[in-house]
Structure formats: C-alpha cells, structure tokens
Length: 325
Image 1: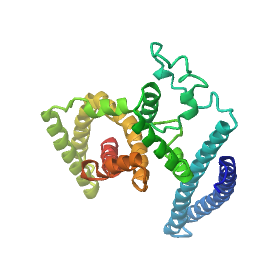
Image 2 (image 1 turned 180 degrees about the vertical axis):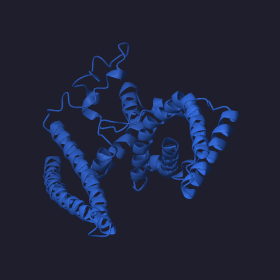
Image 3 (image 1 turned 135 degrees about the vertical axis):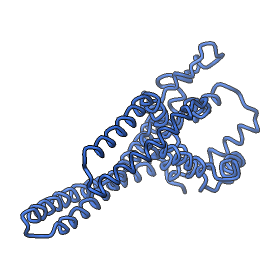
Image 4 (image 1 turned 30 degrees about the horizontal axis):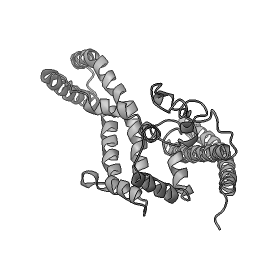
C-alpha cells in the first residue's frame, strides 16, 4: 500500500531539514579552518618578509585557503538546494492542509474579464485555481497551464493528460529536483524575452573600427611585452606606450555604450538558458510510459538531431564567452 502524501512529505521534510542543519555545522567548522589557514599563511608571509623563510612556504597555506574557499562554495550550493527542497515540501503541506492561499503564483496576467467562465470560477487571482495547481518552473509552463484552464479539450486529450498525471504523481524525486533547479524557485524562463533576444536584428560594428581595434590591440600587447621584457623604460618607449594606450582607450570609450548594452542584454537570457538546459537535461534522463509524456520526451531528445539540453548548454557557454570579452 502506497504511503499517504502527508507521510511522504513529512519524512522528506524532516530529512532535508536535518541535512541543512548538518551542512550548516560543516560550514561553521570549515570557516574556523579557513581562519586558521589564513593566520598560518600570514605568519609564514611575515617570516618570509623578515628573511627567515623562503616565500614559497607562504604559497602552501595560500593554496590550501583557495581549496577551502572552493569547498565552502560547494557547501553553500548544497545548503541552497536543501533550503529549496524544504520550501517545496512546506508548500506541499500547505496545499494538503488547505492553507496555500496567497503563497503561490496567482496568474493575474492571464485574467480575461470577457472570458465566459474564468471570473465566475475564480481561475486566477489570489486563492484561485491556478494558484492551487501551478508548480510551474517557467513562465511558458504557467502559460500552458493557463491555456488548459481557459480552453476546452477533446476527451482523448483529457485522458492522455490524466494518464500523464498518474505517472508523474508518485515521482516525488523528479518533482523535487525540478523544484530545486535554477537560482531561485520563483524565477523562471521568460519565453518572450528569450525570443526577442534571439530574433533581434544584427547591429555589427563598422568593419574599419573592428580592424583598427584588432590591430591596435596586437601592437599594444607587443609594445608592453617588449617594454617589460627588455626593461627599456626610456622616454621614447614610454611615449609610444602612452599614445597606443590613449588610442585604445578612445576606441573603447566610443563603443562603451553599445558594448554595455550588448552585455547587459545577454545576462538575463543567459540565466534563463541555464534553467532551461537543466530542466531539459533532467527530463531527458527519464523513462515514461504514458503516450503524452513519451511523445514530449521523444521530441526533447531528438530535436534537431541532438538532445535539446546539450544544444542549449552550448549556446549558454557561447554567451558566457561573449560576456567575458
């Protein structure tokens, strides 16, 4: 006999709360170790400056400190996942105990005062049906749920949806993983913004400006290497470096506004692609039997001949490269 939803949620909420407490203890201890390593490094550096030790000894605690910082970042990430999981099960308890009102997405943007039944049935708004049902991670998912509530479907489609729900209902692990992906539970992919970014017309810089920037950058780099390598700091060399630096600076200032606009326009879509690629990668690993889910996962896995998650992840890495430049 399957366990009651309350028992499953209670067991998992207890486990995630205990895991969070354990991670917090580990983080506190790691912080003390970091402090001790930092103090040791400072002491070794002081002795090295005084001439009592080689400066390489100070590199040992420095390397250890960097490793501890990396470990702490891993712990912080695990703690964030634990917090999101706790929030997921707490919201599940709220629904089961009928105290969910006002704690979810109301779907106000889907309200249509002219719809024949949306207002009468309280589909949207605080304590509406949409708020009760929606656990969507993306705005596209919210729009799909709203369209299901606002439009009718034939009996065959409804049966397929019911079969899919029955298959998903016991998959608590999958639903928890979907709920904890991304940087924040309430942040989701904005399809309109992604589409606008992807379809925006190209606005390249003039070819002469690109060529001049490239040539000046090479000359500037070569001049600096020559300057430092030969330790030649005469007035003539200094003037050359200053003139080249001023030219590069003027070009940078002339395109600064456009570059900031481009980079700023990448940040939000890149964040959305992170979440979307993680969701698709998780779904691609699943095996379903209901026709609706089988068709959906098959389309995700074979879109364009390659798994959708990998293609989106490659696009995300390309955007990171652009952002870093």
